[in-house]
Length: 495
Ligand SMILES: [Zn+2]
Image (cartoon, helix red, strand yellow):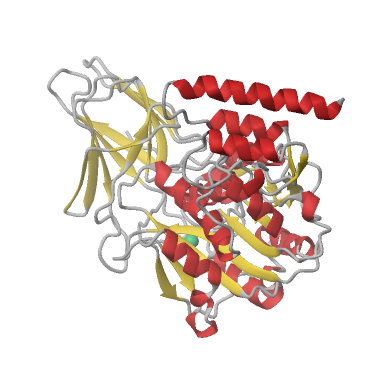
C-alpha cells in the first residue's frame, strides 16, 4: 500500500492474519514523510516487520531528502526495520556514519541501535523491539515551529528579555507568507519572532554594550542549529552569575525561527513560498523584494539594530549540516580576520573540538547581508553536524559555551559559581562572612552581590543558601548560626 502526495499522510495498515497493525502519521508540525509501505508478518513473535519509507524530495531533486520525522503507532513489542533510499545525488551518500533517532515522549531521544547502508538503502532498527506502543522517529532531534513559539514565550517572560523595536508585545515581528507545500497541503502564515536580551538597568550606562545578533531556523531541517541557539538563549536569561555579568556588558538581538513555514511543513531546506530557492541566497533587498519569507525578518533587523547606537560587533547564524569529514565548525571569513576576533578565539579555547572554515562565498547569505547592510564586524555561519551520535545536551551545552565565550572575550571570569564570593570553588562560611560584611550596601560579586544587581541583600543571601556546600557535619549548624547573626544584624540596621 502506497501513498503519494496525499493531503493527509495518515493511514492504518492492517495486515490480514496478523496480530499487529502499524499506523504512521506524518501530518503535524515539523513532520516529514512522502509515503510508506509495510511488508512482513508484523507483530508475530520471531518475525520482522519492514516499513519502507520514501523521503520528501523538496528542493534538492533527484530523490534527495534531508529531513525525516514521523510517528509510528501500534509498534509495542514489534521487531520493526525501517528502510529508506539513501539517494543523495552528486556523490556518496551523506548518511555515512549517520544514526536515526526515536522517542516515546518527544522529549527524550535515543539513537537507533542498528543503522546500516547497503545497496542504496539505509535501514535502521532497535534491538529487542519497541517498549511502548507509539514512537516518534526522526533524522535528528526535531525542533518544531511550536517549540520555537513556546520557547519564545518562556524567554519573554524573563526579566532580561523584551520584544525588539519591530515587534509587538508578544515579540511578533511579522507573518510568514504561508503557501502550498510539495504534498499539496495548505500551510497557513505563521508568526515570526524576535527579542532582545540584556540587563535593562545598564542600558543607560556610560559604556556602550557589545552588540550581538543571532538567528536560527533558516534551513528548515537543520534542527541541531536551533537546539544550539536555544542553549545560548537559555544561558543568557539564566541566573548564572557569568550570564548576569554578560547581560550588563552586552545586548543580544535574537531571531529564533527564520523559516516558520518550511519548518512547520517539514521541508528539508527551503521555505514554502519558494521551494525551489535556497533561502540563504536571497539576503539582499533586490532579491527578497519578491520573497516575503525573507523580507519580513530582514526589514525587522534594520529597525531592531537602531534601538541602541552601538555598532554590530557579531552576527551568528546557527545552521547544521551532514558530516563533511570534520567536526562542528563555523564558516568565518579569514580575509577579514574574523577568525581571530576575541569571541571566536574564546570559543575555540572553551570548546576545542570546534573548527574554523574559511568563508569565501559571495552569495547573499545572511552573513554577507549582515556585513553589508547591518555593519556586522564579525560574521559566522555556524554548522553543527548530524552524525556523531551525541546526546541532545551536547548541543545545548555548546550554545552555553557561545555565551561563556562572549563573557570571556569581555574579560568576565567564566568560572564564577553563584555564592562563591572568593572564587575558591566552594560556597561556604567564608563566602557567608564576606556577604555579611557587605550586607545591605552596594557591592560587587566578590563582595557578595551574586545576582549582580549592584547591592548585597537578601536575594544574594538566598542564592548563597541555595548553593551552600557543607564540607563537614557541623557546618550546617554553624551556617544557621551565621545566618541568624546576619539577620539579627540586618534588623539592627533597619531600626
Ligand atoms: Zn543551513
